[in-house]
Length: 88
Image 1 (tube, rainbow, N blue to C red):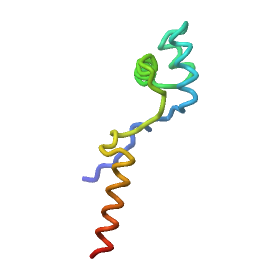
Image 2 (tube, rainbow, N blue to C red):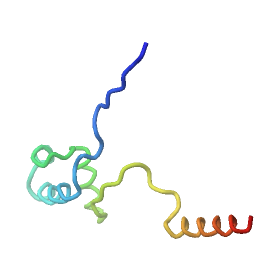
Image 3 (tube, one colour):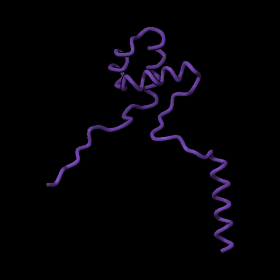
Image 4 (cartoon, one colour):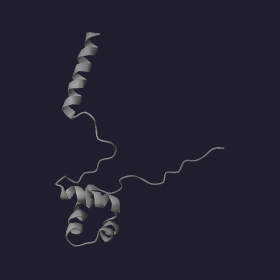
């Protein structure tokens, strides 16, 4: 029997600007639930972004896992791989 996959939702439909705009009022006056509804951002994401903002981290949208290598390490690895390929 064939099963049809239905996508249950889209990830990260909120914008970074909307999230930045809602973090400040929630920290000062507005409730978390009301702010999430008014600005159409997920409540759990808003809660996490508020906690990160209080720790001094910027509000950014990042999907997936963090990378293992830094940009400089990745550049060195690519350079070594290209040099190795030229020697072959």
